[in-house]
Image (cartoon, rainbow, N blue to C red; front, side, top):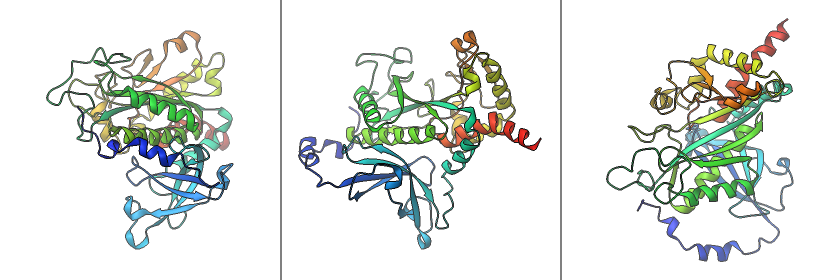
Length: 371
């Protein structure tokens, strides 16, 4: 049996007794933000006198940045600026979750606030109608760090039966996956689907299609919901790109991209042009596709286990060993989207989508303007 947290063993029936109490017309709002690691999420809750109808109804707040790797103790207050509101699937309506940007004491974006710059880029290329869909892979662990459902000593059977598998011997932790799916739907997150992945106890959910800045907002909140659901079950979700060494698949965050031109007849030509531009900036993108400038992806992008080699750029139709995959249907219909398979599971979606939009579209716009 996998090690689970003590808090998950507390009586949920007792908890429900309190959760069903009326709130006296008040509203709980949980503020969510990205901490100084660029990967961790933090949250805290406050009471509002009434249910907010839009993001402008939610006031700014602050927090102690010296406790989140974001400030010195002598100047620790950081601003929380609400940017996107969702329903709260844990305490239910009328309560809200609100994703926030973090600003420093001087009102400039914190170092791990990539949303601010991403939003500027997305506004500049708005006319292109760029859509993203991100495939978030993750691995379930016990609180001891051992993969959930794996034998305490040794390993499960080799990869093969687990991908989209069914049965207690193949699917580990489906209760968590299905609870997370429902939580996303209730919250208003644009979750597209889910499936078991190639490594046992590894799963994936997809978010999208989302236009522009919404991609990062919805994926970060989906991640928050995943960690929060796992907390209730007493297990841990890791986004480590290579949680198990050896002959096991790593975890990525494949990013699907489509512009208005790509979705129209003859769009394949625009897809191929975008891929050519991405190839010229391969190293630059690799440095932005995980939080540690490519060091995490070095463990994953080996050229094995359905990955390309981190040093090489490649593209192909239906090729899961390439940097960029053109789906077979897109190759046949000559329109649609492409998939960038390089981003790691723990990537910042703002950094990834900003890099793709800038490389594929913004430089083209800048050239037009300079003429």
